[in-house]
Length: 170
Image (cartoon, rainbow, N blue to C red):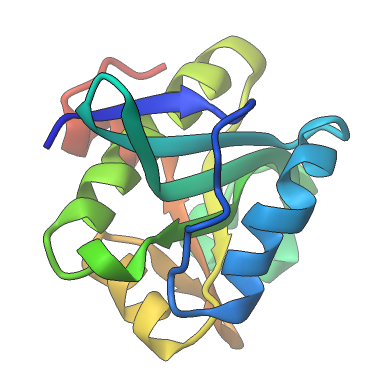
């Protein structure tokens, strides 16, 4: 399999199904509109041959912030009232390839894009709202920390992501 990460544009997403109706429907019905309103959408495309392509994953990112009082004292110490962040707004892998490690691969690619954006525009953390406990466990496995009082809203310091990926920060 040959995977390419591309900005969402004209790719056919009609056959994409991640097993979660909300995430599947969002890609098929709302992603194009979201892209015009400040959200950036990227798709992971499988091209087994020149004339065949299939979207097997996607994520969406958008500028965001979190209030200092919503985060741990360790993260909030010395931070502004509004901590600049990038929201990993959507993230899904097609059910036909789940369990093959593509979630981790797509997350790495998402974090690399987020780090580049934050290096240019600023940011301190990545925020994600896990859709369920299984998703929250996935993010915790990848060093995201639950926000106090909200175990499905998780944060990852950009400095932690950069160190894990071997990327210079800032």
